[in-house]
Length: 276
Image (cartoon, rainbow, N blue to C red; front, top):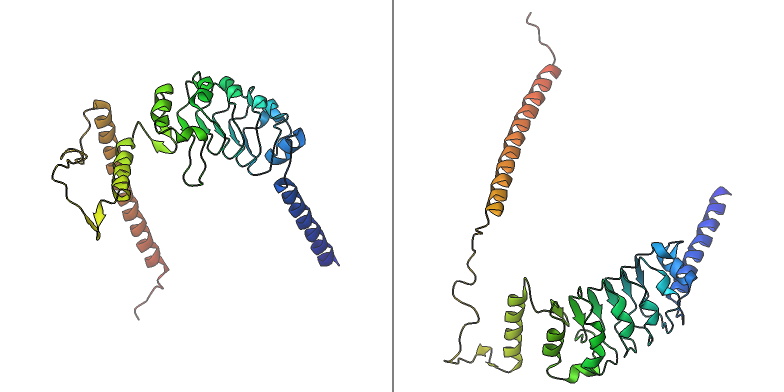
């Protein structure tokens, strides 16, 4: 009977969990306090740090502005038009608004901590729509176009939009998923040039067509490993090697002691033999 009771209880619990999952995945029109609590597991809206409302058909952002501590927010794949409820979120650093129906970005200018912004797949029609974001000094990553999901914006039809965006936002490090400055940008550009060459049909029968006026992308010494001249770095390397050497010595000593102990214990276990 106990086994039957536990089985029924487990079955009921499973059905409740499944029902709860379906309720969370069901389409919703408006974000409510109950929805925020159920998705985050927090009782206090101001304690919520991360939210993911992807593909729920949301139209109205409701009371999401009450999540004052929110740092990361994913609202991709919805029907959002009005971003006004996001304006109080001053701690927000990562915001994904891809695949919505957004054209006005004005409410985001107060999100002063914003670093990563994904706007691909909306209806941003001109560069002027981005002017309100110029006050966001921490903004480093902007995405208006995403070839992976075939998301874009009307503004991306302008052949020079990337150059204009980079000029508008001088602190940008990543644009449309492409690293434009900083570590890795040179390698990225090199790979991109190779891809562009291939797409341009420079290969015939698997062989690259030779162009005598071509120049190498990088200098001959580009790939050489250069030793740092920084005295602090050099000293850190030295200290690390010293510690590593000491660890190896300790390991050898420990191995010797363990071996010696095991040998002594094995001798003690041997039965005593008496000569008659």
